[in-house]
Length: 460
Image (cartoon, rainbow, N blue to C red; front, side, top):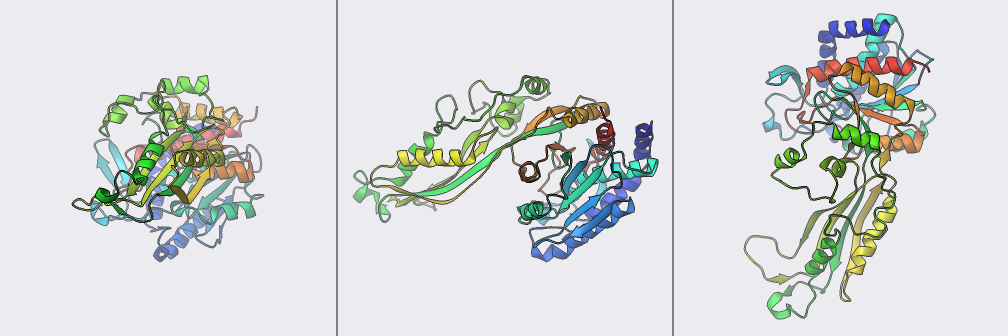
């Protein structure tokens, strides 16, 4: 019956929980701007003090950038969970688009219910505090945590995490656990709790194709002279075939088919692919034939031209035949696709389209593998059932079109399976002016973590 008492306490303690979140949101912990280094330090101190107040052995750990926060609970039995969040936030520009001061967080009534408005309310202070408040409730009601818990908060997630990998390599023994939990994602639908089990990786390439030694007059040289923009457009246009598949050699090596049980969960979602596209002025999916919009977004790889330029692009007209053509291209990866193999295949593809008088120069390339979580790990189904008991709809395993590097770092550096469970909504405006977090998401997020921790504490 301890869980029921904890849930009752969470309901009764909502005003106090919101007051604590508002205090944290007032700290201007913008990690990208050195002028706010003191505020980032202040946020780390606030979290250390708060965790100590509920019995955690918490401390601030220095890095070359902003500090980490590490904390360990007093419970030594049960599944050992390591919870990750980040206390830093995005810059607030453009300030004039905010309806109120970004760091003066306030409760606001909206047509969809009350929200807390302010920078970091959803990404990620509000989310990380759902977990802290669940721990607080367990300690208050029972005097102990329900299972073994460690907490790891970062202060540079919004500025590319330069200190993260070195810190994890140096402290991987302390980061050991049975499973990692990340609360920096959202719900696929307002009433459908979601566990992200696949994250796409990425390969990026910027390059220049050079033809003549200088820009040429198209009347004097057009015809006999090669045009690098024409070469580039032909090469990039050949990245896809008529069915939408990527044509690079070996590109689909390591791309798995969607498991039947996950496909069934996705098919049961109240997701309208046509509406999704209509909202941005589109009418027809442009990816692989025979794949649903959700498959294209979450479980299939992509090749996209992100930018392409050369010649004269200013006002008026200049009949120039350019010396150079430039482009930026990215690939989203899934499953076991090898970033190095994809990069090599892309370079081979470009070079196969070069005529004799053109050369290619690569200015920057980078790649990261996709992250795939083992949903047969017992913690995943326990967490899904716990979420299903809290929300109107059953919990689902979903994909994510973007990349969350920390999940891969937990796997590669520490050897941890990772569950990404968040309660953000699509309209939270993270990274944008007027960021908000639904009070219902905050409240039910706390209750959800209380249930999950209880489920993970149970032994078979």
